[in-house]
Length: 315
Image 1 (tube, rainbow, N blue to C red):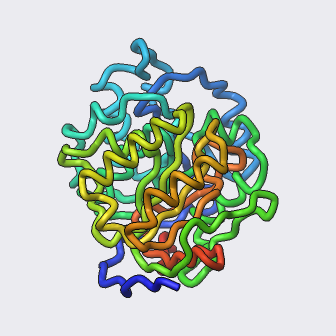
Image 2: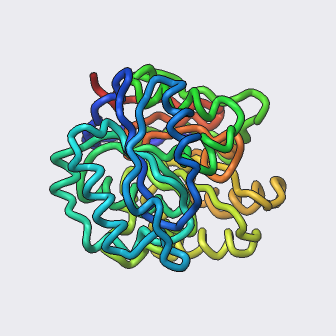
């Protein structure tokens, strides 16, 4: 069994926990989608929370939810708003990379709070981790997941993580109905980081690419055939990214044959002698579990266990 070196990484800062009866802000930093505001308000109210919808949610600029200025203002506004306790994204799509070089990371750092999303939102997870230094959450989108009633434990994973019920030392639970697959056994300690594989690759060569040193990489994707997944992984290998990793957690890769994917993963990661665990339900899948991006974790691929090694929210 391969045991990767003990981490010497400093943990990213935890964020304030979502309080009871808190206020959740919703922004659309990427693509547009219609929002049934009354239903969204009722959904949150039934769970004890209020919702503040920022203006860009109601805008549409082609394949973007409003202009770059509108979407950036909403991102900054949601973080600067002292009444907002957490920020959830409306949907993914495309648009967040256009904002990266204009984000005021000092503002975000000074007003750190739970920030949740996936897909195109991966670009923001990577950038915030690198330049603002606090934990974010790869988790459900308001429209596609919570209001679309994705099956449990989508909702319970989301709220338990943000409320601080998942603490340092906790084993992150995974539904037994979706068995995990050990691609390469072993144990690794590191910082969990990543998200959508296409977006990770798209940021390579920019100031916002993932700092992979000591990272346990999480990847997932959708609408990408196997050869494109191969191409994306090869890009990361040729860039030297994979050689820096301590482990890999693979989420759902929708539309790709599981056996063929497992073979590709083994071929890709076996030379690096790092643990690889596949099948984690987070991202473009149902259920969609919440993962803390930038948090220190322990991955035991042989025993199919992921353990949180730091508190990610504080009361």
